[in-house]
Image (cartoon, rainbow, N blue to C red):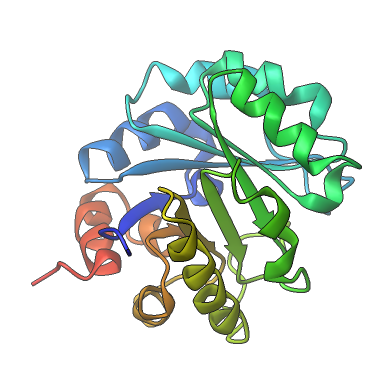
Length: 222
């Protein structure tokens, strides 16, 4: 059963010179999650932040810290991000040899475990680990950079995963990340997504617009 739509602003689009203030601003504006993109310049062609920044930001919001690890290998860094204050840790199947073990480790640190599917990664990859996942993240762009265009073919994957999740009867979030804006958000929700990651669309126009942007993405703006 699909849950109410939650919005997870990606701080990749925030003003990095004012990151603590930006996190507080999206918190007040009604964000449900704070989405933190971790990139290593190896698994994806960009470098962002590490556990120390996550730890520094933790004091600025009590909202769910949704940490997307675009790094390889991921396993050596799971404990560091868990200790830094992550609530959800999501890994790519391609980022290590033992996805099941990675998810077990995340759960062992007392965190919610997520699996991330790149555009070319089939939904079937998560089938053997559905008993462990708490979140499935569909990338609707190729990971590594913000501001890309939504890949429409991922809507079928979202719909497939919605059926797979519903068949388990488990409380698994279905998240979509990439090219989410006021036009693509309704499509992702209609396909079955219940968490939307939005960077550019959330932070557009500055802090005075964050609340309205989040409401519009959720579909509750007047």
